[in-house]
Amino acid sequence: MLVGTLTPVATPFLVDIPFDTVYVRSIIVVSLYVSVIAVLLSAAVSLPIALIVGFSRFPGKRFLTSVINTGMGFPSVVVGLLVLFLVSNQGPLGEFELVFTKRAMIMSQFVLATPPITAISLAAIAGVDQNVRDAAHALGGTRVDVALVTIKEARYGIATAVLAGFGRAISEVGSVLIVGGNIAGADGVSKTRTLTTAISLEARQGRYETAMVLGGILFILVLLVNAVVVRLGDQGVQR
Image 1 (cartoon, rainbow, N blue to C red):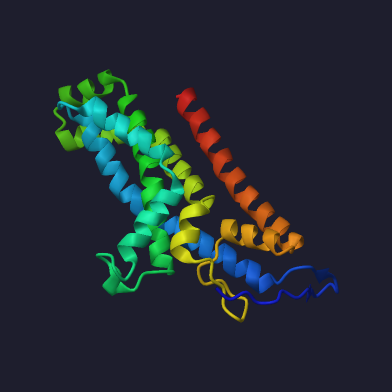
Image 2 (tube, rainbow, N blue to C red):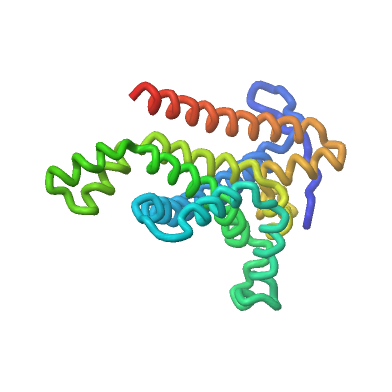
């Protein structure tokens, strides 16, 4: 991992910024890129699973739901270790050379984001009044029609689930540090360094100004996500 020296940057207003703006900007870009892609992929998998489980009746459904809920607390470092094994030279995906790449980080965050998105979406779908489904059936709707109506009724909960998954991904440190390596180039541009791993590194090396700036950015991102979640939750209750 290569760490460049951060030098103050003079702005057009002749004010010295005590951190490298290119460095900070590249970290933000990497963090958002990895987290957004991971959450989109996770949502594409989680929502169908939530629909299938929510609409089906089968032995072991309660146990499966418990397993999904338990996955929300799965240790991130264990996820990182498992993903690292998969992408290592000795692992089944070793031929793709994914170690210390953004793709490996996306895989790790995908695993972490999937349980909360699935669990919260499942709860939202299960919370839709049975009368809504019965009315859709009574009007001659097919299973697909009933599913679409249910999704419409549960849309606030599903949106909350996706945002919760994004919050879990963007604030993750352990797994992305293991599979990504926290790498930045000699030019100070982040390769696999995210907001969380950069904060840890900058604080350890005594660059507290940069660490505080990165921490503030991460705090704002998480605060915005939580604000949207609360807003959607209020709208769902008002309905």
